[in-house]
Length: 352
Image (cartoon, rainbow, N blue to C red):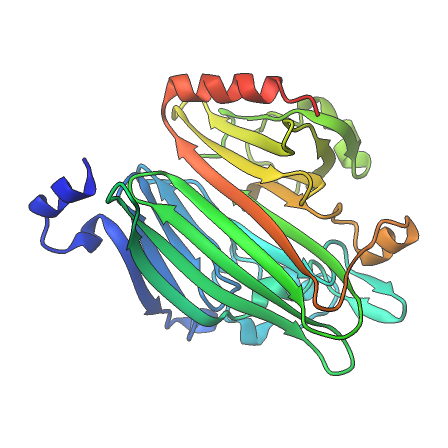
C-alpha cells in the first residue's frame, strides 16, 4: 500500500511509519535515550541514541533477528576502558554495535597506551541528534536520523563521527552513512568495525551464510578446527568457545560486496552490503555457546586483532588533520524467494 492510500486508513501514521523517542528507566539502562522506528513495511527496530546511534533490537515480520545479550542495554556511564571487561559488561549486542575509532579489536598496549576491547565508540552518546521525515520525488516519505559521536582527549585525538541513518517507507533496508573527521592538528590512528549481530530465531540450525572471498584466515585453533562448517550453524552448546574467521571479500567492479544470511525454514534472509574500498576486511563471529548464541558479520578497516597487531604488521591506518573519511553500509531483509536467488547469483559472480 502506498503512503497516500495508507493515510486514508489510519489516524496516527506512527501505527505504521515513523519514529518515537523515549527513555529507559530500569536498572543499568536507566536514563538511556532511544528511538523506536517503524518503516511502513515489515521492519521494526530501535536506535539507541546514547549508544552511538547504534541499532538495538530488530524484528522482521514480527520475528526477532538481532542478538540481545544478557547484559541488556547499559547506560554508557558504566563504561570503563579496561581490557575486555569494559566492553563485555556493556555489550548488549543489538543489530549493530559500532567499534573504534582509534582502536578496535583485541585489548592491547600500543606505544605505552593501554587499549580496551573494541574501543569506546559504542559507549559514546550521540550529540546534535535530529530526526525528520521527508518526502521523495515519488511522494513516498523516508526517515532520516542524524547525530555526532565525539572521541576526544586532552593531548590526544579529537575525532568526530557524523552518522546518518535512512529508512524509506515500505522498503526493508536500513542505510547508514558515516563520516569521520579528524578535528585535531596531528594525525591519529584510525580503526573502525561495524559489528552486526544476528540472534534466534533468525539464527538457528536452519541458517546459512553465503559470501565470496579472496582471502580467508581462521583466527585460532578452535576456528581452524571448525572452518569446514563456517557457513552453517549448530545448536547451542554449553561452554563452546567462539570461532572467528577473517576474510577479504570479493566485490563487483565498483568495490561493492554482499553477504547473505538466510534462514531456509523461516524463508527470510538478510543481506549486508558495503564497499571493500572503505572496509577492506570482514570478520565472521560464530558464537554457538548456550546463552551467548550469536552470529556476527563485521566489516572493518582491519581484522579485530587490535591496534598493536596492525602497527606491528605495517597495516595501521591514520587519519590526517582535517581529513574526512566516508563509510556506507546497509542491511536489507527480504522474504522474496526470487530476490534471494538473485542475491545468491550476484554473490557467486563477485570476482574483483
